[in-house]
Image (cartoon, rainbow, N blue to C red; front, side, top):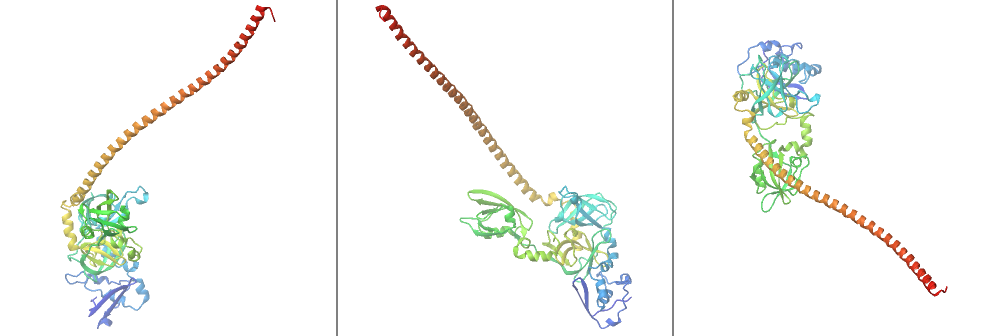
Length: 487
């Protein structure tokens, strides 16, 4: 079958339906379409010009211009029928696909070994390239042969958000890379999502380019403090500032050890960081100095005015944690999930033209082109980009903070021990006073009893004295009568 020659062709996607607007002086001479073979398997067998993955899409164009709704619906870009046409295209690449799973930190059975990303097999002896920012917990890779192997993260490329995993797997099928450095606008691309039949199809919408970083966001309204520093006037809800514990009237003095004399200093120091970085603010709260840790965010992730846009942009799915700030990436309209990044994306020849690196929006995903991926793999395989090496500065910073925290903890422990000792002394004195008070009360009770007893004896003695006095008077009277003989 000879390809249809076009003067001009423009492709666009509306509602998942492929629409081709074609101007051709020989359109009527196009060969009739066989709906049992809409792409024309013979088309794949034809010789194509060097340097292009697809010479023509004449059969797809012919399909698209058919004025038959059933045909259009049957071959909607998101329909199984349309995606099935790419089954053979991704067949070999499925063998080079790894599903990256994590046990996670939860003990829930549902969280055990769940999929967190896809990976691209880059060697036959167990090396897998994947998206770095989605990795967490204990890592495992599931391969096309059904084997599941524990994976170790041995290489990090922070700039491209790529990670190299090492497993004990052997005899794997490495990805077959395209000899083109990158796909270009209008190219059809396909992404295998598992080792069976799932697939997503898209079109390259923007050529490979620099993806600008986002401005790190704290979420505070500020004013300049006197004589130095930046005073927090207000804290935005659900912002890094609120989550980190910043409060109105706090005065920011330093950011990661760098002096913050005014708002310009704060902005300058922030520009040295990216969204996702953890920074330490030295603040003055009242008369006490404190340190507050914040995880910087992207403005559009927390800005209230962008909440509705973000929800619409994600189309109900979670966007990638890192979806900006890549040195070189091409954009395509494949509808990927965040957990489906890290795997290979292929052209119509079935050759890998890149590695998906981010779900960036409702109708946009990003891929690192082959021309950038291969050098990344070579670098990470040297062992010079292990997490310990790449994160050395941050590890040193954390270790310093750990040492400072341990020192503060020891000082607080000593202070607590002194307070406990002082409390024991006070408690001993209290107990002594309580015992003394009890003894005094007992002695007082005894004295009261003795006084009552003595009072009773005194009463008895008085009664006896009165009796004796009466007796004495009677005896004297008897004595007188006896002496005188008179009665």
